[in-house]
Length: 428
Image 1 (spheres, rainbow, N blue to C red):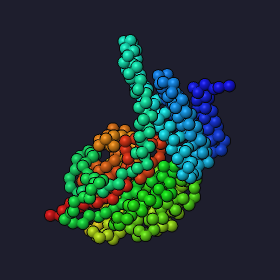
Image 2: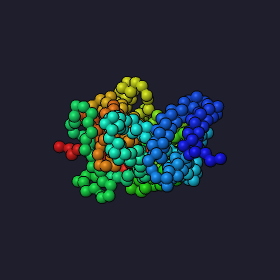
Image 3: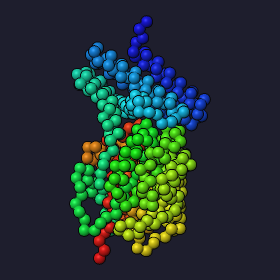
Image 4: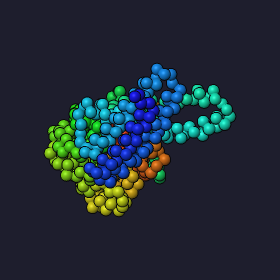
């Protein structure tokens, strides 16, 4: 008995939508079960509708290809979500055969649902006007979410290697504003009259299916080969898979060991889910964790005072003002603040620090940076998304992240492997 592919796909979707949350509820509890329902509920309907539309207008030769691709993607999605019930880091084959296609299918299904809704008014208008020929031409737009998801896999696995020159000091706007910053990807920056402070910032590495132990080690080795003056890790080291693999983070951070004494870290929001694992991994390699604390590092440009703010979800203003007052500025020191979530930057008193270094936003994760434009989905939100910002004399650099977590793809926003050059304003 031959099963119709459309019916088979719907049966598989139903099995996943019911089976994964029930398994999660029994084995892991209601939190992950709810998460699974939300993820599957946002991705599967768009995928099913798109499949029906695509097979209705392609040739018979391509129907088999589309059926096979959708069945494989949906099965991979179900296996990946099921594996998260008892999450742990998996090997290269599982990541390549299950996690990557499964998460790409999740993103494509979600995007397809949004895309189809966005096109609905146009198609309804054309249908009312009996513009059938135009509607037939526009059918190709159904492919856009899936092409975009496929392209974004490449964006997600290839962070950009950059040299970023950040000017410090000077007056600035009265409202938070993105300001220009020099980025050098394929060329070396011009020399400066005075040596800058070089900083490697590691933001949001998120050890997991897109960031294996070996991959994170390679990224660290590449950055540290440039012998930075400071290495600052601004939080969010793990994913569910990373948390379920004790010792993996310590193994991944091994290249930091020779930089003990000039390597400092803070907690991000996800680090509070596994604080002992993160603390142990950092301590093993001599990385100093700052939890609302300060450290002083001697560098080739002079002493640098480094403040590390713990992540808090509420009461940001009181938290930051208290911490900054408890650790006053040291005369003659460059003063840096590590602040995982850039949302708190607005609460920093003017002139309290020379530069705040943040991450958390993954650069916006969905945007048009790959096309040379600054726009991301966070552009109109309260969060500074990526790059350099100014508010009065204060400066904020938001790192796009070494990895990512949450939404399963970077779309138009590559990750960042950068060496920051901090250039102080000339003294008069």
